[in-house]
Length: 332
Ligand code: NAD
Ligand code: TDX
Picture 1: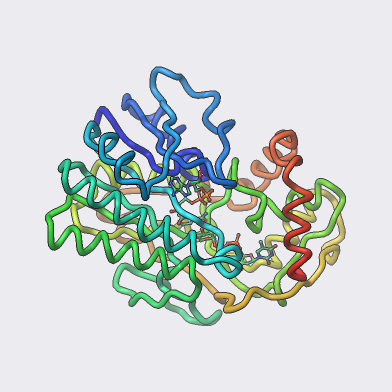
Picture 2 (picture 1 turned 180 degrees about the vertical axis):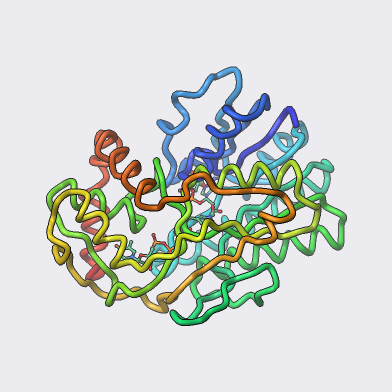
């Protein structure tokens, strides 16, 4: 694949993926990104301009999307509204970007006959009990809880229908919670790291017993590239790195890193409809495609990420106060 279009490539995971492509392939990469509040041009700034081009545009704008898609060997689709809490305050952009945007891209790849990989989330499967011995697999029924996850579920189903009805050459991956550099500070791990750096206290929703299955964004990227090159058309692959931790454990790891007492955090108002536990069984990806994560040690990956936020305070600090004010207005 010589030419790859990456939608949402100026966001957290998309930009990590663009870095991964530059390092591990010879492809020329076009990033299509609307540059919403969640995007950052800085994340792409160090990349060679003869390999990576940024086009500012909306994935739901067919007139902008179709000519861009037509010249590509593949489209890897990360662009989305991605934050559950925002989807509870205002679901409209989630429906527009995640559903209508994905539909617009599918029509473009259908017309141009271009390979498509759709990035999705484990949240489409709903949640698990804390003591459930089962984890999510590709056969788990869809049962999304939030406006965000329901729009991601809707977009996955559109992709499946376009494969079956129109023969679109597509694959889907559903990944667990990512952490790593360039994650927006509205999200759990960077919010707590930056609270502590600035001398504040982490904010735990409810009792902090909710479990997330953490994977480093670099491991997500290597899995997506593997599926793009070796995955079977029409298939879904779950991506996860056996990283289950409850939120309290993660907060206490962050506090310990800074030498702060383990109870130096606040309990705040819980998220409405808060999913209890996500957990991924990635056997299919590992056995069929031979993929393995490289960040096997979460504590080490988290420590690297904390140091990254310490070193990149110029990037996040200008936005910190406004984000905390909007959480505080909701009692969070
Ligand atoms: P993000 O919010 O950090 O970045 C999203 C990017 O998409 C931003 O650069 C934004 O400007 C762009 N975008 C938004 N609307 C757009 C539009 N209409 N047209 C063009 N660009 C638009 O998100 P993220 O955390 O990097 O997530 C990327 C993808 O991975 C999403 O599809 C998300 O559902 C999925 N995912 C995320 C996680 C996670 O833990 N963050 C886990 C599994 C799957
Ligand atoms: O301040 C907080 N305190 C807190 O306890 C925040 C922001 C979150 N939380 C909790 C809620 C969740 O249990 O931490 C957990 C993680 O929260 P988020 O970072 O908002 O992630 P989550 O809702 O799990 O969704 C993420 O993973 C799946 C991504 O945002 C999605 O895009 C992805 O699909």
